[in-house]
Amino acid sequence: MTTIPTLFTPAAHDALASAYPALPCGLSHGLARHPLFTRAALEALAASLPVSHVEHSIGDVPVNQDPSATQVAPMTAPEVVRSIDTNRCWMVMKKVEHVPAYADLLETLLASLAHLVGPRTGPIIRPEAFVFLSAPNSVTPFHMDPEHNILLQIEGRKTMNVYPAGSTELVPQEAHEAFHRGAHRNLVHRPAFEAQARPFALQPGDAVYVPVKAPHWVQNGPEVSISFSVTWRSRLSDGEARLHLVNHQLRKLGLQPALPGQSPLADQAKIRAHRGFKAVTHTVKRALGRQPDRTAY
Ligand SMILES: [Fe+2]
Image (cartoon, rainbow, N blue to C red; front, side):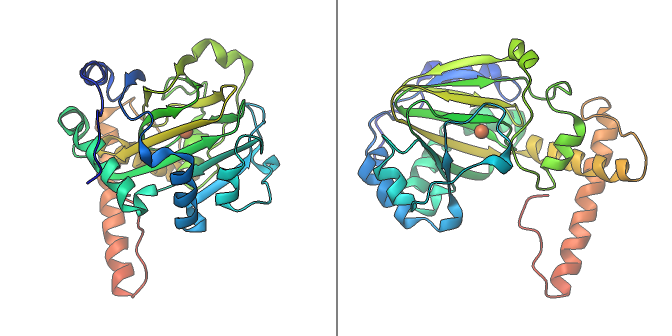
């Protein structure tokens, strides 16, 4: 087990207890200068992960970046890490729990939060960890993610601009439904949205909790930024995803489905129906010798 000097501070536990699961909040942690996040350690991590677990692109892009305009630097993942001071790249190493030392860190961090999370959204499921490495001044475009996320700033500075989850002005229902069917995570950003942004200026030792599907974009500071992100799914995130998938099917039938949250009874009926349907298709696929879905829904 990796030795960890401090996880989240007592003040961070209080802040998360007040905000979780619906609201973003600033937190503090003791992982700055942790040996798993030195440049040498990250270069070794980049070399050890499957290619499918690493994504990188040129990072001096607009907030409103069209995913089809993304440019990828012709470098291997370890080369991106080695030259991050000058290569203008943004990089994410996904599912780093593939490497046991990072798996230990993820497990320990989430175990310290289980007493806060469990009573509100049920057991932590499908935990995953990500490392973000960004060249000076790079931008992560406006997007949303499907899981609960705590991003811990390890080195350098960045500002996370977090917007409310569930606003149909920011993200139309059709975009939610497309997202759960595999559409790119990037979203359309308009200047009028800015009034709804809540900026979290992060330096080493700071962290931010980002609720499920809360849109956000990131402006990195004038030096290289290294961040560690711990994520998890829950009964809440699982149900939210199922509602959008069911609503997509209803919309295809020409109906105008109720938005998630408008009718708790209808929401529960849709979630139960989707669970039942997926359980049946899972059983049929196994009986036919086909690979069932690996997601929770
Ligand atoms: Fe994100």
